[in-house]
Image (cartoon, rainbow, N blue to C red; front, side):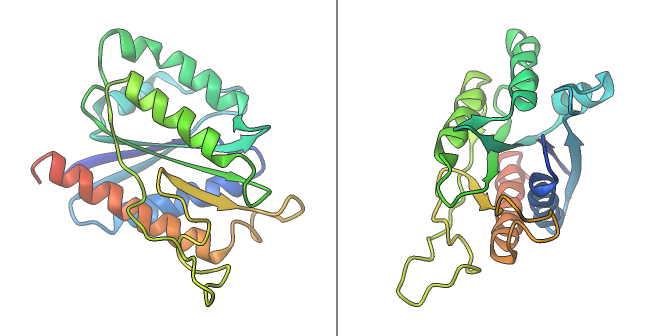
Length: 192
């Protein structure tokens, strides 16, 4: 059994929907146990949640993009991972990441690069989307990977959309497929 954790912060409820779709896709992979860990609005996790991260085979990081980077709550969590780093607790675990912002670009790539750097500092192995972009003339906004990200998962939710209205269905389907990819990579890496 592969143990996959989706650890994320969601400020307005959009990123939690993305996290749930990632977890849904990972859970569709036979032999994968999935757990969602929400970072509190104070940027904290409990001791039991830190222990779950230490025991995970794969960790998927998620945060909204605010002002070109992760939320301060996610950054507080990331800074606290230095305790795991000092003991190399997450070395050779599978890692991946996702983000959501109000605009189509919204500097989401900068946030994904931050998540990638965090994973690399921890000695983790990064998994990208592995999806071709929907970039033909016939492409529609709700096609899989319409935002065209390879480095990690991106979604867009209009600034005035409720969590029920955004991310859009195509972004949530992309998230589900991404979760499945991460789970399959984790199973393969762990010989399952």
